[in-house]
Amino acid sequence: MPLAATDLVTVPLTTITMPEISLRTRDAHKLRGYFGELFREHSPLLHNHFADGSFRQGYPLVQYKVLGGTPTLVGLGEGAALLVELFLSIRELDLEGRRYPVLAKHITHGQAAVGVDAGALHAYRFETRWLPLNQENHREYQALGPAERQRQLSRILNNNLLAFLKHMGADTTARVLLNLRLTEPVTTLFKNQPMLGFGGEFVTNVVLPAGVGLGKSVARGFGTVAAINL
Image (cartoon, rainbow, N blue to C red; front, side):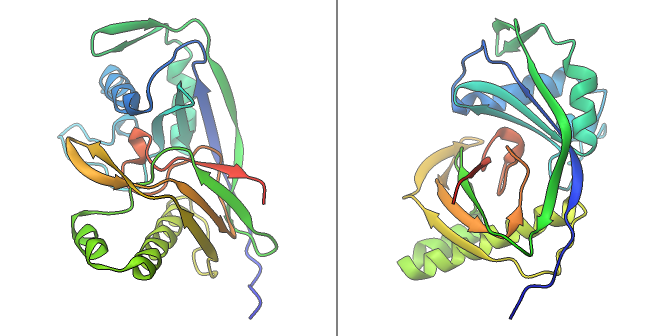
């Protein structure tokens, strides 16, 4: 059955990298902690908490990552404008008492397409570990065989894609196509709790902006995707 044509939407996208600073992938949460505290009074988008301490629901519009050893910040929608406004003035990072002078920043700002592509497939790779499982579906995952695990993880990624499309204001009624190929999971710590993190690739008809995250804890850098050639 042919796919119905679906228009893509555009969303503002800002990416900031600090190429002269080298960090470990697991240091992404330190970036979030530092900038979230530094700009705590400015906007809940920077740390996903409101002034009363309640949690901001919804897809994180500012994400903190370490990609290839480089500190990277990604802002979408309102978060894109915030990054341009606030981070041009940053001169150093103070990550748990260790100071890093920011001698160079690379900033790109523009519009990115998002939506279901009726005419082409797109391939992506997880640049950082994808965290698909919560406590409930982790128990289910452990009880399943290999084929059932693959189906479960494909359903979860499909839901991740639909949730992202919804938060970006794109149409979610068109059928999403997905083929997922994952590597063996590794145990990673999230808030001092062990969780299964997956690498791998997937092919889909969903158009994703460069550097966005899918799954759990994308604000801390998990689940970051990069486009690859088919």
